[in-house]
Length: 192
Image (cartoon, rainbow, N blue to C red):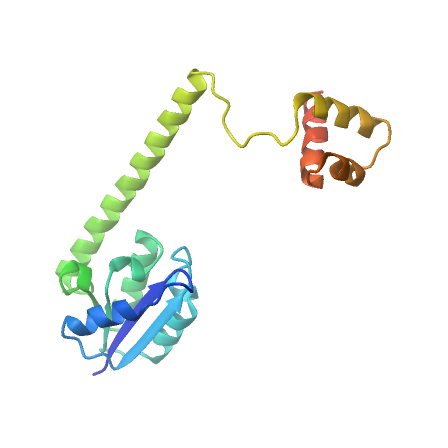
């Protein structure tokens, strides 16, 4: 049975070669190598090379990756990918986890624990972010992107638009986008 290996990098300035070297150095004879240069935010099945790998790998063969995050964008994506491979009796080896086969009972348990930890991390991050935003608001800080126009410019934009000036010409005069001008105009109409 063949051994497939998969690598992923995010940008063209990076190379997946180090991942292949790491896999081979761990003692795996790579028969088929696939690598994507694509954001980790893209789910595994939507990556061109990973999809090609899925089309070529046969039931009962082995897939090796250097790190868990190469398999998917988040715990749910990794879990779905591993379940898909397990349904085809494809062993999934992640070197980062000590050559543990994620399709084995111990591997499934490890994957469940990792997913739970990842979810807790996300929840704690959201909690910390909300607490920080609440503190900043209580201190009177203005949140969000700074306005590209001054309060006086916004008053002028509204009066000039009411006098018949077009959104496009106002955008050119004030050096901002049409969307910015529309936002100023709509903010006033919403508050009326």
